[in-house]
Image 1: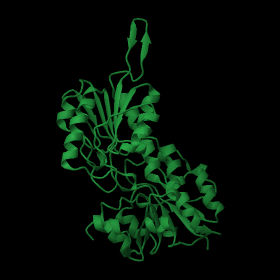
Image 2: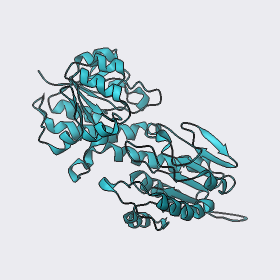
Image 3: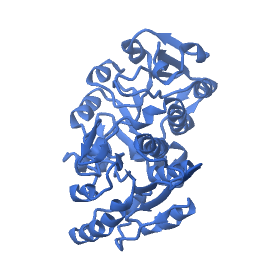
Image 4: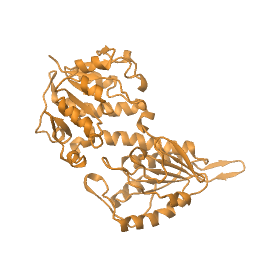
Length: 374
C-alpha cells in the first residue's frame, strides 16, 4: 500500500500557514504517495480545496489522523491530535521541542516517530530543509513593514515643493536571516539603516546590504552560527555602546533569538526612555520573552512616547509565500525516503537522525533531553 500523507487543519487561532501547497502535493503524488487533507485546511492561507489535484479530502482532523502514515504540520500537535494519530505514525513539523515535556511523553507513549525541523543539523545539505531560516526571512521582511507602517515619519527621503524630508533612521539588532532581511527591506523602502550583531563576522553581510555596522567591541560568536551568551562585563559594554545608536534611531527592529532559549534582553528600559518621541520599536522576539524591556507579547504598548510592538505569528502575516517556502522545506526533508510510494527511514542519514525527536517510544535528541531535565 502506498504511504498516506495527512495534512490536518492548523488549530492555533493565529496560524494561517499550511504544510503543503498545490505544487508540492503534485510532487508527493509523483513519488507514489497518497495525500489526505482536511477540507478547508488551506483556506486561511488562500489555498482552496479545488487547487489540490489528486488529494482526498475528509471532513475532520480525526479522519486525517486515522488515515495518515505521515502527518505534516506547522504547529505542534495538541494532545487530542496525538491521541488520534496511528500508533507508530510519523510526524514532521515545527514541534517546539524544548517547551513541553508532556507533549513529548504523549508522543512516546503513542510510539510516534517525530522530526522537529528546529533540530536540523547546521550543515550544507540541510539548507534546503531549513524552515527556521525560510520563516525568519518572512519575519524580517514583515517586521520592517510593521515599523514603516507605524512610524510617524517617511522611511525614504522625500522632496516636495517646499523642501526635502530626510529619510528615517532604522536600527536593526541581530544580523541573522531575519535581521538581514529586515535590513534589506528597510533599505529598499529608502531608510538609512544601521545594524548590530555580537558576531563580528556579520559586518561584511550588513555592509553588503548598504547598512552601517555598529561596532560595540563585543564579540560572541558561538556554535552552529548562533551567538553564545554574553558575560556580565560584555553585556555592560554592549549596553553602553548600543544606547547611543538606539537614542538616535527613528525605528528599532530587534531580531535576536536563539532556538530553545528565552530571548536575551538587549534593549533596557533606560535605553527606550532615551529614544526620540514618536520612535517605533518592533520586537520580533516577543514570542520568547522579547529583546526589549517592556515588550508585551501580542500587543502594542506606549512607553513614554515610544511605541513598542510585540508581534506574534509573524510569518502568518504573509501566508501564501510563507506556506510555499515551508512546504518545500518539508518536502526536501522527507522526499528522499519515499520511493515507489513506500516510506523507508534511513537512520544512517545525518540529517534524519539529527532532527529526530521521538522514535520507538524514546526521546532521541540529547539536546532536548538536557533542556527539559530528562
